[in-house]
Each structure stands twice: as C-alpha cells, then as structure tokens.
Length: 225
Image (cartoon, rainbow, N blue to C red; front, side):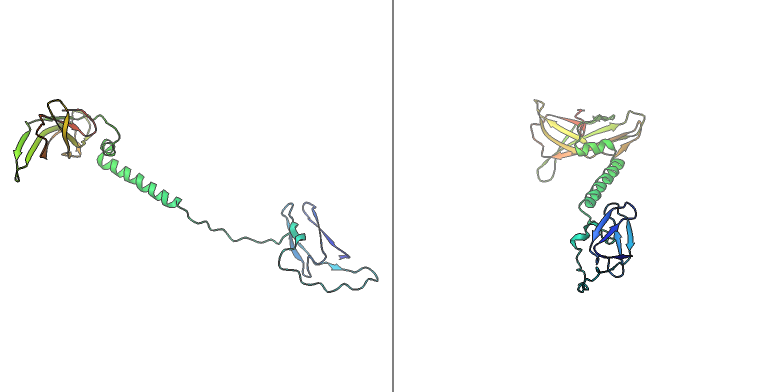
C-alpha cells in the first residue's frame, strides 16, 4: 500500500488506532504491540509518496535510540530477565525455630514431658510417685572441719504404668518452720517401672546450725514428705 502522510496503525484484534509519523515503521517493517489489548503483530514497511508537484522531502535522519514520545501506545515485544530475589533473614529465622522444635522433642523423649516442664519452670505438677525419708538424717564432721548433713530415702511407683522420676528437693527448716537451706538431689533413675522402688541419698555441707527438721519433695511439686 502507498501512503502520502502520517500513517495510521490499526490493531487487528480490537481495532484500536494509532497515528504515527511515516518513518515510524522503518524500511524493514516493525513488530508492534497494541497498548489497549496487548496483541502483537508485524507491520510491514510503507512507502510514502509526496504530493504532486511538491519538492522531494529532505533526507530523514535515523530514529533516536530512545523511544519517541509518540510511541507511548506501541512497543517492541521484549522479555525482561527474571528477577532474583535476595534471601532475607527469614531463612535464618526458620532454621532457628526448627532447631528449637527438634530440641524440645528430643528433650521430651529422653526426660519425659513432666521432667521437661519442671526444668523449664512451667509451674508445679502432680507426680504420681511416693517419696519418704527412710532413715534419720545424719550429721558428720569431714576433713577441714566442715559439717556434712546427709539424708536418705526411698521413691516408689504405686501406679500400673511406668513413670518418669523427677529430681528431689531437700529442705531444712528451723523451729518456726521457715526454710533456712535447700538443695536438689539428682534423681536416682530416670524412670520407674510399675510397682518398683528405688533408694536415694543426698548430702549438703555447712548447713545452718538452726536447722531442726528436714523434708523432701519432688522438684516443682511442693508436696512435703
């Protein structure tokens, strides 16, 4: 086709039209994309014919590399390179949470849920085990002139299922019932079978002389024996 002025482009899909200079397509044609419906098509080169008796038009300078203002409605189809997202602190946070969860599960399996709760300080709990002092507490003098206070007792499981054994807390009180000294005795066994019993012993050095009685409990329960 032959055109004698500004050329009009029409989208073959939606019919949208664009008025562009006659040198917009170029001698080899150009791929066009409709800004209205995003349809792409190839527009062939067009030959412009000057009006009769008019002088020949001056040479057309090459089109600038930048997209001219009149081409805001059309653009060459290009593919943008994929954007690589930087890994933020979320990955590190997820790994920390995963390690904490796995550590909690492992501690629960090895020590039992009640023992874990006790070590984490999550309130008092009921322990279905029996505990008692089985022998009169013993005061002894040891090397260096220090005084050793020893207590021994027994833990038993009256239930018909295996139970975890918590650590044992020993407390010394004065005549008014006020606690003047306390320490923790490591549990003799981690778990106790149904109907089974186990003995324990604990000692402390240089306890206050005002101590008049001793009691033992399971750590975190507050139930005296």
